[in-house]
Image (cartoon, rainbow, N blue to C red; front, side):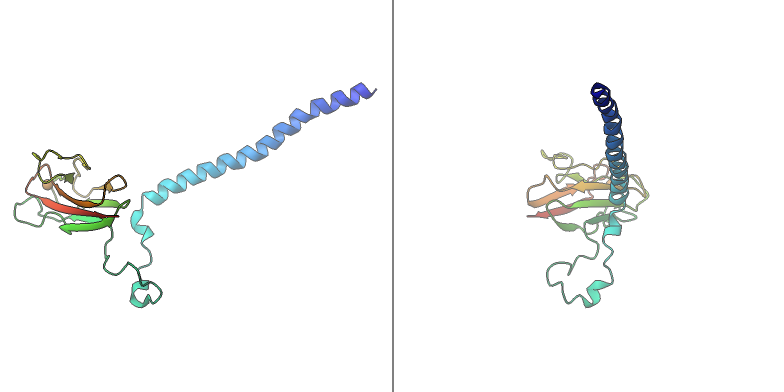
Length: 170
Ligand SMILES: [Cu+2]
């Protein structure tokens, strides 16, 4: 009965195959799920990346960069910014490396935007970026990955006298 033996092998193989595949795919799916979950978690807390705060005191091993950047890649809209003459964006000029993702935080009581272009009538108004309305206490991101190095004046569409400059370096 050799034919019985061979049919037995044929019948068990798919079962083993399925088991093997399950052992491969279940950990794969779990890993994928965890990766995606942690990815979102990590990207939703960008300030946590800048943990090495205590190092700049000593910092003998880091001669490059990290010298002047106190609040890297951050623009703050201070309270009172909606009143003409008050500081509108701090720092007024922010310099970042191409690819940096800037967080614009509105600490004022009025909604504001950061919109590229020197004013709402500029031909390039909003062409490079537009956060749209940032509500009080909220923040928005400006991604510089697709911006060519250079100086970018920007303004607030709600209060066109609110102006700032973003400088992107290579
Ligand atoms: Cu505004």
